[in-house]
Length: 132
Image (cartoon, rainbow, N blue to C red):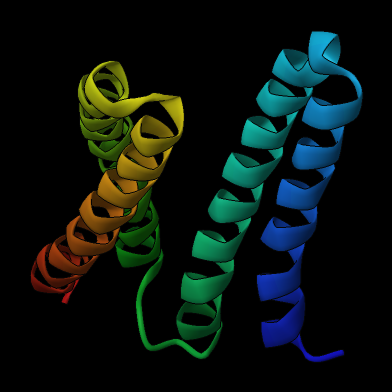
């Protein structure tokens, strides 16, 4: 299996594990969800480092640029997660109260996806300007 397929497969498998845990054992779903968040954040940090490591290893960027790029990428990741979580919760709770829980969940996920996608694209441009 190629690295790209594995990268796409890992989050889908983690989501499946969470869905099964939620359906089968609702009492432990919160703990499983927290563990999955930690695992996913750890994977995101590893992928960010791996993305910059190749350029550092080939000598295209210096050590200080390598560290600066990773710090900026991590800051952008956590800023995007915070904005997506906050705005997704607002949209989900507002529409959930008006039209039902499922509509709220779908609206929250959709809003979080749009915010994270657009935020990550904007942060990528900012990072390229700052790091070079």
